[in-house]
Image 1 (cartoon, rainbow, N blue to C red):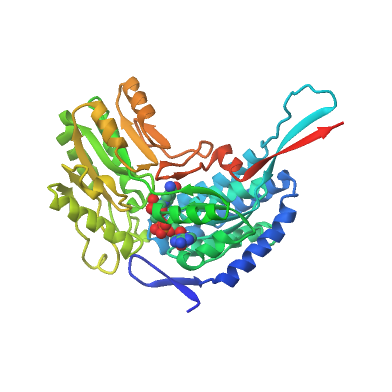
Image 2 (spheres, rainbow, N blue to C red):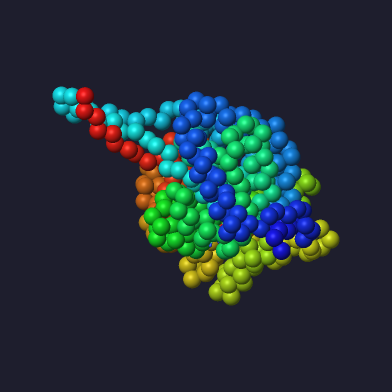
Length: 461
Ligand code: NAD
């Protein structure tokens, strides 16, 4: 078979198919990308910016169509898919403008007849490898930065949700990008991954996905001296202090923990609540979680299914493990059944209380709609528990005392910290992880600089 079938996770039906590329396809794409790079790097940045704004406009014009494709392959409610498309278009616009501000430097050596120019150059052909959960956002985080910097891009989306990325490629073509500046190649990571990474004409691998996949990619890339940005898994903690605004904290944690059915790298996975408000806070979370409507993406619901059996099973395994070790399920906990659910991978919002760090729910990435909760006595204990993880993508703290909250934020081993609410991430600030959650930063000028390399030109006059 030289195609891959794409499955609707709500009912198991085939919604489309894509090419199952092989090594020869990879070579062809990269050689032509390298050819395109020779001209693209010489294109004035103002022209690149204009094209990028046109592509963003194309995304907005096609947003309903794109969102429909995304909803059908991923199962996320349509409104959330539309938001993803429009926010990604905004990110392209932001990168286009930020690219205009890239600068070199001339140090003041004050040596007669001599100067040194420090200039930034695009690194070259970039391979982008992305996961299933936010296929458009996670690609545009790389694509918008790489293209404006003067790199060309070969994008390999997840085999679970490739159709929206294929459509995005067409939108970029229609915007007028020169041929092969941005290409999409589809296939299984385990089949063509090494061909993409090891190819001598590839300069950089920009990867978002699971930690074990990312580490393997990092090893292969290092062996061939390729640059990498690795955005990997997470297991993010939230601390709710004694003096927190409980209404705000409960709403934010439930919203964030169950967004995209929990298939969300920096979602709240575990919550530490001060013992004096522990029972009360759990009740609030449960009350909000119970109101979440679950269904297929076009039904006006709040939450859809998990994308496939492998991702689905993780939630079941973690719930069973927690129950066996003495935790209590406060809501959810078992697969949804009935006419609307039997053919899909539907798992309800699940809150597990009285957990501890022997349990998978508190230590391993869930990537599903399950949150573990544990009481704490002192803020020091809570901070230690938050940092007791191999991951370090995000952390959250709720306390009306800003001095406590800021001290905790400073102590967290995490790439991003939210204090007192969980608002959406901004386009101009860096995003990325520490520890096993990754290497490098995306977004903002930091994200663009990651697709450039510095060159020093010595000048004698
Ligand atoms: P995954 O690691 O299974 O796959 C991600 C991508 O890597 C896919 O395109 C896949 O085809 C490709 N791939 C797989 N094996 C490969 C190989 N040997 N060589 C090259 N490419 C290969 O991840 P997934 O299941 O699609 O997504 C879930 C994971 O992504 C979670 O662990 C989640 O935390 C992570 N994620 C991280 C972030 C972040 O920004 N840190 C964002 C979203 C998702």
